[in-house]
Length: 308
Image (cartoon, rainbow, N blue to C red; front, side):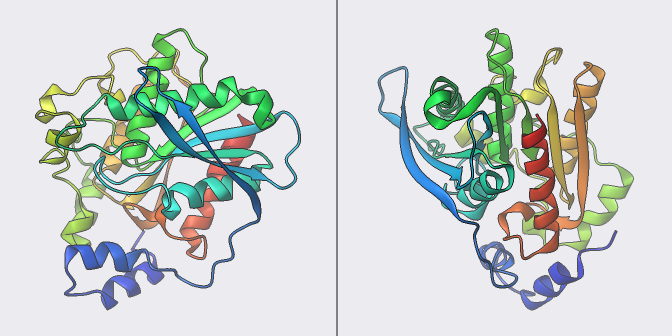
């Protein structure tokens, strides 16, 4: 499918812009957006090592009933950027809470820096998930219906945490929901179809050099130092991994990682559903639901969380 016409028009408007201007301009609202009403609160999950607490933004549906489903969600940003307040963070959590009649928790995990490498980021996410599980009664949710997920780098973190929970003997998330995930330290080969699409978008959205620089900060070393504790796609045996939903962007080099991970999960007998949102580029869930593909992706995500 060609680029979505609304997205293509936006890219045409931004022609000649710098990379930063592209990233900012592409996420500008595509029309008036009225966020759904929810009950908002904040919490803090103490880190086991005593190094402070992980800030959590908690969104609860106004009509939530006891035993509701929940989602622990992480924004993207290449491990070194992004923020919990972006639509891809709090916005998605708010929408999922409202659509499922449940709870969604947006995790303000520590970003990677020259001094703060893995596993600090996955530790924060696991701490957040275990806090939500331990406080299920207080939150009014069913501890057996707590999903985990994220977008891009957030998907990398949450997929690795799900693997850690499996290795620890549980409790397991009811669902792992990954939007345009990066779960391999080196991108798998592109399909011919994907390779033909990437030259059609600005280079800053291609992201094929994700292992350059970013991993040096996230891992504290080159990409080859990655392992399954920080890149779930490197796991040799995914048997027993939780049910998984993967939402890929169409014109996105990282789609190769999402597609390969789906194949690995299927080979291990995991219940996995993967689909590509037509006509989109990497990061499309960061746009508000006034952009049609975002509405569709959010509906798919919420339905999976509710059904898990």
